[in-house]
Length: 105
Image 1 (cartoon, helix red, strand yellow):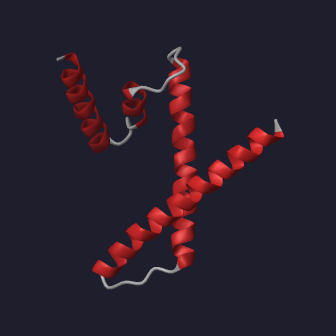
Image 2 (cartoon, one colour):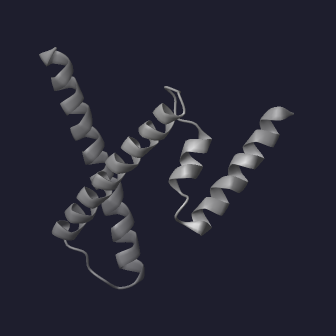
């Protein structure tokens, strides 16, 4: 399975590069609008922090689905993840309700 591990590593690097690029674009846009300057070192650090957060979120969502006896993550898992952020939780619950109503038509 070394080929699969190499493919996974390449995919992870591709995703990290895409995150770095997107983070850089967003930071540059905000910096220009506020007459600030962001260094590549700052953008790299922010990108790594975002990547770590994404990994933690993914692990939590997988654990929630597994605890629910499922192999697929669903909207309930995402709402559960946001339970400590009241504003985000309310937005996600409203959106989940709207999607459910739309799908039931």
